[in-house]
Image (cartoon, rainbow, N blue to C red):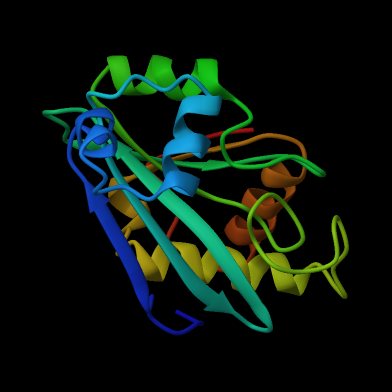
Length: 166
């Protein structure tokens, strides 16, 4: 897949407890608190390159999980915008992996702007590569532009996800 491997990785087990002791930086703590995510999930954050962009991505894991869901947000949104769905998935034993698309959330780029849809394909490939996700053993959920990215992904002849929700 395209894109270079992540150069920054942070792993926080029970992120709320780690935040109290100063192990998680104030920016990540503010980010997780703002979206009222329960502090008993394991949180990992990564940034990586996808073409000219620096992508912010994360993973939240319940204590015991065996399935992964890749979550793709919509246009002019960000990866934590669907907090209720994220909590629903975590409460049912899914690991959730998501990232902010180029020009969205904490990723670089002109807000909401890309040069071509191919940049979203590069983003998708890099997200899967950096989190070592095997689509044939994972699920994907896309909203709005995220759905279009998943449709485009399926048309490119790459391994299909075990299940996809658009």
